[in-house]
Each structure stands twice: as C-alpha cells, then as structure tokens.
Image 1: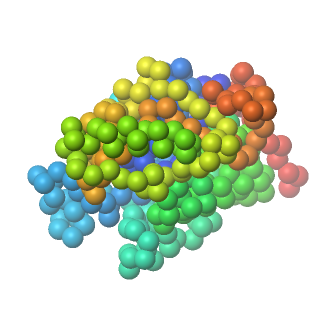
Image 2 (image 1 turned 90 degrees about the horizontal axis):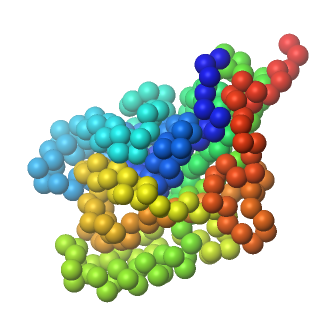
Amino acid sequence: MTEQPARRLLLVHAHPDDESINNGTTMARYAAEGAGVTLVTCTLGEEGEVIPSDLAHLAPDRENTLGAHRIGELAQAMKELGVTDHRFLGGPGRYRDSGMMGLATNRSGFWGVDLDEAAADLVAVIREVRPQVLVTYDENGGYGHPDHIQAHRVALRAADLAAEPAFRRDLGAAHRIAKVYYNRVPRSVAEERFEVLRGALGHLPWAEAAVIADVPGVVDDAAVTTKIEAGPYGAAKAAAMRAHATQVAVLEPWFALSNNLAQPLFADEYYELVRGEPGAAAGQLEDDLFAGLPSSAPAEESALPEENA
C-alpha cells in the first residue's frame, strides 16, 4: 500500500462551495500541517443560482453548463486551501444536483439515487484513503436541502459498510473510521455575530441580513464538542469562498448567497462529535479533530482483520 500521512481527514459535501463555507479553515489548517485531507463532493451543483450577471448564461434554464463551470471554481478553492485530493462521488457528473426540496428534479437527482449504490462509491474512497476522521452534515443536512440530507445518509452508510470485511472486498480491505463529526455553529456565536452584522448593514452592498435560521447547523452551545480556531487560516477560507464566484459574494467578514442576504463568515469552525471517543476533558472543547487518537496511525495498520472465507 502507498505510504500515507499519519493523520487523514475525509469530508463529504453535497455541492461545490459547501466545503469552503463550512470547513475552509479546518481544511487549510490540516493541509498546512501535512495531514491527508480528502474532499468528496457528491454533485456538481448544476441547479445552483448564479450571482454574477455576466455568468447568468450558465444557469440550468439557459445553457445548463453551470456544473462544468463549478468544477473549475472548486479546483481554485482547493488551491486556496492547499488541498490536493478532491474528488466527485463516482466521478464528475455521476450524481446530479437535486435542486431544493420539492422540485420535480429531485427524483432524477442525487436525492433519488439508491443509497447503497452511492455509498459503495464512497466506500471505495474510504478504503483507499483510510481516514481516522469523517466530517459531514447532520441528519437534516444542516438546513434541509435534499442533497445535504442524502450526503449525510451516504456518508454514514459508507462508514458502516467500509468497516464490514465481507462487504465488496473488491473495493479494498475493511477500514473503520474512528471519529465522525457534524458541522455546527454554536447559537451564542451566531447571535453575537448577527448582532454585529445588523449594525454594519449600512456600510455593506446588501441591504438586508439573513436570520440565524438560514445558517446551517446552528445548535445550542452544549451540543458543540470541538472548535477549530481560524488563526492564520481564516484568510484562506475567505479566499476559497471567493473562488466560488457563481454562488458566493464575499466582503470579509461577511458574505451573501444569491438571495443577497448578508450573513457572517464564520472563520472559527465548530463541530459535534457523534461517533468516537472525545479527546478533551468533560466540559472542555477539543481543539483538534484528531484529539485522543494515536499520534501516528499508518494506513497499513488501520485495516480490520478479514473474515475467514
């Protein structure tokens, strides 16, 4: 097996730009520290709305070439974060963006695919990369988008299947992921930042602010287990978000999506550990997704024993 970094992180997202908005700081930090950072994006985001007027022709109701364009945006964002291993689930275009909940396209998009079929594509990645840590959305996809919900389902199903020695031996040796996290934002942090935002609106190109309910993954502070501070990596996150120009307009420390509602750019990133053992004392936040894991865990040693034939 090819030698891999001792620490290996896998992130599963629904569309290009989700990774930068949710995890840009985290990805930049671990890439800079020499950890293996693998991003799997489930769709090309073909159904997204387009912000710049000079790119409006890419939209799904016109040329329908937005997905191909967003491949380039994602590649540029990954350069900003220093991440070299970024993939589309099953290959580019294998699963199409479903659009928002309730649209007719849902059934033909990622939302409507067979769960185990999509999970098998991710199992292949897990068994190749052999990550100790997985980051994805909660069971509501953070805010209810069907592709985000499906990404959650696929990520957890694949984590389970990858650990089963009898499942698809052609995809590689079994591997168990030690820790699984959901993307989160503590409610107190969201409230504080939105209060500052409301005072800054008169100086921004956006007349109105979003509301806390528009922010994916906001939870009571007690649910948050882990904080990754921005440090020197917050600027890389903003640059990565800016690379997704069809979807995101950035004016640090704020940004807006196609609805032109301003919201905070959360440079510090937060998580909830949902599988695995915490690496901090009770009542304390982890400051490292790998906290509590062995300091060196070569991929060759992380395989589970094969079952007898």
